[in-house]
Length: 557
Image (cartoon, rainbow, N blue to C red; front, side):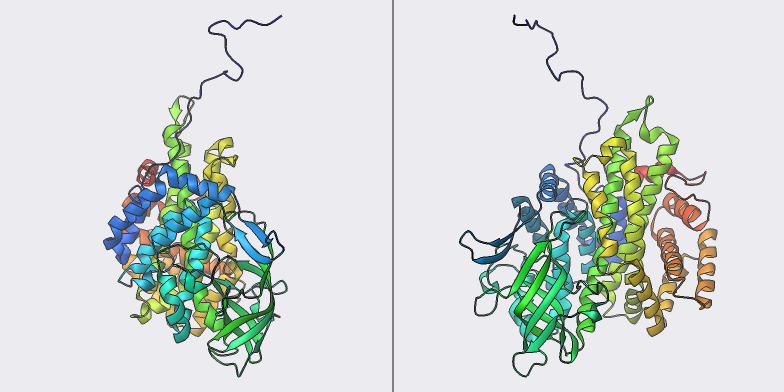
């Protein structure tokens, strides 16, 4: 007997209406809705880029771009070692969304604009755009960052500069796998770490033998491996290998000048926790060809400048991921209701999101202040000293602070935050990476100590940033005095390195906020982070803080 369905009878699955769910955060302008980023861009010398940054923020926040970022992350690259006839390819195939996102970031010039179009504030303007891009699709920033960092090293080699820089400077993304002369744009990567060494690159076993007499610009044959070889699809890599004169840096293209493929054998792609859209690999060099950059035995100094720029981008990337998570949390609490009130109207939740907003604004201001030092280092010894000391310190601090904040932002969403269908999953899995990439936390703190020992003037450049803020906040003044006592005590400095760097950075953040942010933000930051009236988790801001003003300022609307 067939059951009869009468009008009004619920059908399978039609059991409820969808109520009290926030709309997706899309079709918004990432720059125009981020007052902290606008302010930090202006005070650090890139106010002229406001219109361009606003246009890029609108592109990034469009529903179409948000979806492209999701698709790129959900469809990781695939390795094709051979074609169907058995010929070796060593080819990485990407989802179309990856190529679309790469077209966006290269079209904006984030891979080379400060070099191809130099002007005051160029690095700051790029940094602001980089922070926004991280919120939508961070995997595409890896090849972009390495290309950006490679340019200073390439400029020191006249032949490489003449041959490669015009194509690198191009804003046309070209994802094809073919010799560089046939391409409209080129990207550069790096290969440093090996299985046995990690950060200890001087233990590398990869060997380079000169084809002729060797020396700067000379051709070498390289045999060995790299345990992490990011973006194997890039057109060339800067690679460390042991030459007769010691550890050296080589320029290794994917295609050789005669149009044949270089002997770079991809072993496998890394199955990473996050960073899914981007390809990271293990490779072997089987008599691959590379050209010496600089002198033999000077590989680390040659490639370290590239690392300096990529460390900046680690801090910027984590700042962007943090802002992305905080934006999602704020968007949620202004729309979601519980117990007859919007979440933002509940005092404890307001405390949580305001605390997250403080962390995000402090990171933004600190990261762009560092970018300003990159703009001005060539013309100012004080800025150069600040950059030497603070690049590893800023990377350490922002990359260490951001993961806890992203986890808290995920918790704001409840169970929905832990579902990978939404944006928090990508941000959560991505956020540990920048603390590891380009040197772990311990390496960064030890680099700060080395900078202090080799360049004692660096500490003067650091304190010069604090002096203009003195006298405006008692907690900040006390923190500055405490910090001077820290540096006066030289005992067991390596043991205390993380503690010292933490104090340096949180004090600098307080000083920057006092000088450049609104009183509600600066007062709350100093009262909590510097005044010792703060708990061990986010959402423990002391009474008297204007939490609603802080949350309203950071809301992405």
